[in-house]
Amino acid sequence: MNNGRHALPECLPNPPVGCVITLDGEVISSGFTQAPGQQHAEAMALSQLPPGLKGLTAYVTLEPCSFFGRTPSCAHTLVAAGVQRVVVAILDPDPRNAGAGITILRQSNVEVRVGLLEEEARKDLGVYLYSASPSER
Image (cartoon, rainbow, N blue to C red; front, side, top):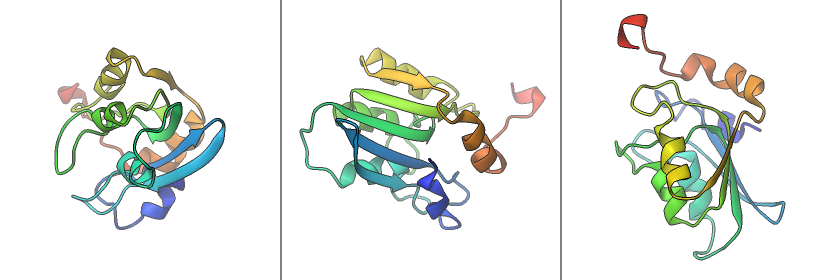
């Protein structure tokens, strides 16, 4: 599932996230996190599609980001693109996100499922994820 492996090492210090977008069960685009300040996996995958497609499902290894940093919020970008379903392997432990991306999607009536291939994603992403110290939790 993690085409994010293609992101390494250029994406660092960002995690190597992958995204696959399907329409009617067929993969129509994919992406992975680019170098800092460039596209995240979701934006890269969406940039390969013509605007206005309906019925899209995005499969992402890590919860889409909720905040605007060097790049726009991936959660908002998915909503703006009209993605109807987002399947996320694992939630982002970064306290700047930590469920907020899922909340944005759900509040925008995007169907969200979490946990598909979770164990595999944790093995791939674990060493790259921000983990708050106990005093920050």
